Length: 458
Image (tube, rainbow, N blue to C red; front, top):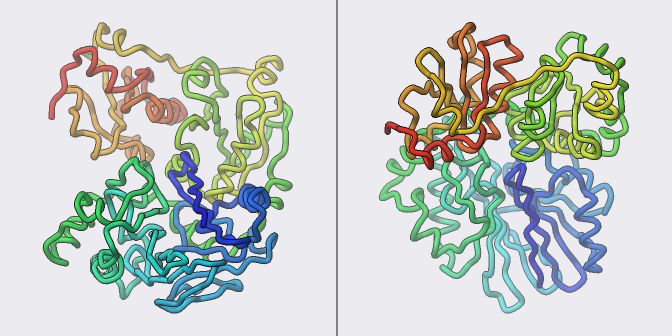
């Protein structure tokens, strides 16, 4: 028996490869199937099954493409209604893989069809459970992503409580917990940075598992939930209904454009230039009106949060990163890329076209500046405010900024900061695009300001 966690930092997502004898399964694969095919080939196994824990909302799963390329059977738990061929397992069903067994545990709550998969070894001992978005390290799945007219958020939270109590917490303490996400995913609100744990450790440390009653559990897991990114419901539908192959997406949308053609297309209605370089490079020079969301951070989730799924995109990337920028968008269902700037910003400047800039200052420079008539914008999330806030700062989480631009002054200097510097340049680019204020980015964020003695309030 062999287990390998395949973790993707950008999406804070974990897929899994499990093998026994010469057979293997993949759990919750990303959209690009080739890494899983290559792994199975390297390990000299045949991919027999592809297990899906639920209809994912934060990424487009690779189950359909992978099944077509390998002949593997897609498996869902009870209540799943995919619009393509799949095996819908019953609760408690045992699926054999070589010398081991996978037991299907229906665990509704995050979504009605959510299921976990319990790995039982050749000696009939439970070894590991693959919990999808039902149980994370330090948290549980949010219960507000599959609300129907006859099923409220509280109804789903109550179902989640029952699933955890009757299906998960009855397992031995030594069983290893392998969730679908780690810290940074919007599928939970308090997910730990660790990507695996044990039932015993979670029983002892996970706040949600310590609730004394179902009522307390419902209150705690629903309190303070940030709005789900808008693309979540779009992706869940794609995963349920099906989608075109990644190969077809790349053939249609991975197109190099000259500066002249890029500029012409950028002027089209509902088109946005997305600059994927790191924030400091973007600040030094960029195409006027572009938005910066760098590949060096949680690129795809922030695109899904900040940009509507229907927006037509043109990509600027550092040379050699163009394909990665398009593939990572396809992973969250963004298939509306019209092309990328061939030759990057070097080609743009060589053609004599205009560039814009956003000044960045160090934390030390900010603290020395005259701040008597400026606006300071803090774009961190509420969960990060515990370490303090600058006394003079306005707090607007980055995910809410688009809807709150009208409340910001248009004629003042606006200093923008986040925790470390990545999100503040996204915010600064959005402000500049909308002609709001004279924008200055604070590099390295609040953590660096606090180290230098900045006064904060709580």
